[in-house]
Amino acid sequence: MIGGTSLAGGVGRITGIVIGTVILGVMTSGFTFLGIDACYQDIVKGGIIVAAVAADQYRQRRRRKA
Image (tube, rainbow, N blue to C red; front, side):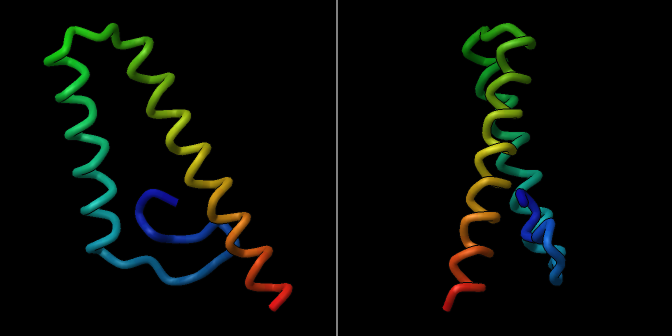
């Protein structure tokens, strides 16, 4: 997912977790700077996490077919 560890198993790395955390932190700071309501911030962050999970599932399916 965001930190680099797949829901289907695998190995996560500290660098992936740090990069994912930094990305979400920068997004939160940017949204706050722009004056976007916290409710909308959560919706966007949730959408990004859902998109990351969907992309990971798609990648796992393609890997199994090959």
